[in-house]
Image (cartoon, rainbow, N blue to C red; front, side, top):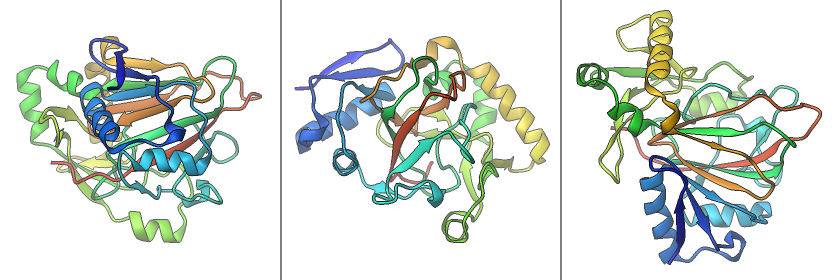
Length: 266
């Protein structure tokens, strides 16, 4: 049995006494997937994972897949994205969920801390099921009728092969139903949402930002303060996350990211 310690009544759980580098048995993987669906975010402390062992551990939860911007892929392990906020890369310091420009966006994002600054650079995760549930019923009904058109967000240069694979605009519901729990959650990436169907891009952006400001409350958020060796797993079907860009850039903040294949939002 896993030792699962909730981090709050609403979001997050720490998984204790597990060494991911030793491999994950099928029975344990099933427990972890259930825990992720329930708690929205899972934390594993003090892991020591080479790139191949990280991929093996993630593979127990689901199928790793390539990420949007191939220029940031690990040179030897291209299913790992390197998050190193220097040069072209900038922190994603707005609330979002990953890779909504795909027909079947990733079900989860896995982050592994290779190097962290002495202070700051945290990652916050918000339970968007709780955020949706707290909205007035009239607004819930309005949101359930809305869809977003999603594409690349324009933050970085896009290579031709990436645009060919992932650049076709795709429509998703603004409220999605979790395939395992049946619960509804707000679902969008404010930069990748080119527009809400039937609205202008400008009006859509204003609407979505106002929705975030209204919906995300402190009680729905877990703020993860990184330590080297941490693994953080985020359920993209129920969560948004963001980076806190508040650290000294003279210090290194290096994470390895793996995304796990998901299904089409409904």
